[in-house]
View 1 (cartoon, rainbow, N blue to C red):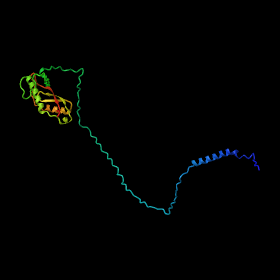
View 2: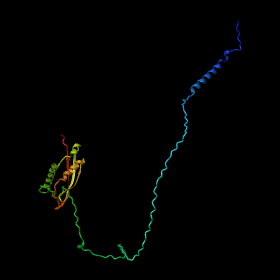
View 3: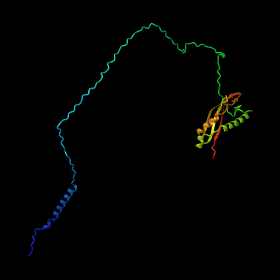
View 4: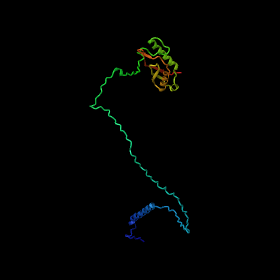
Length: 241
């Protein structure tokens, strides 16, 4: 027996269309499944509060006692008494001290006896190197050259006797030469002590030593006591132990 086929009955002729439709439907379902969002819902309970009785609270009335304001001050008008001026006051007339063209200037001849000459004592200073007579150190004698040599010897002895190295400068290893300037005034006292050195500690010690100098016989120029400036270097040296 031979099987006969209907030439119009072709089952596979629309298979590609069905496949495409099915594929699109599956993609749509997959997209919806992936993009679908869900939210966590919280459980909320609602309670109803029923007030059967209303609470009434009596609030006490507070009375504030405010004191009354003070009464206004009474303004008392002062009585003004008019006093008549019965005393006559003499006015003082001040004459002008300026000289006009019509004023006559009195000519007066001043004699020499009427002129007073005020003597002003000047502090004259003469350098130690050129003074006629140098200041005399206690114990020095002789001519000017011998007095100069004795002065320098006595000054050296004075420095050695009163020299004391500052402890703070020794600890900080401060050393150097200090130049001291001073004036032996016309009374023989040492004044105007100034110093210049590497540190204030050394300058202060140098000024202290010079301040201990004794009173001397002042230097003289033309047999008149004058001030004599003098300078001397003091060398501060640390010995290595």
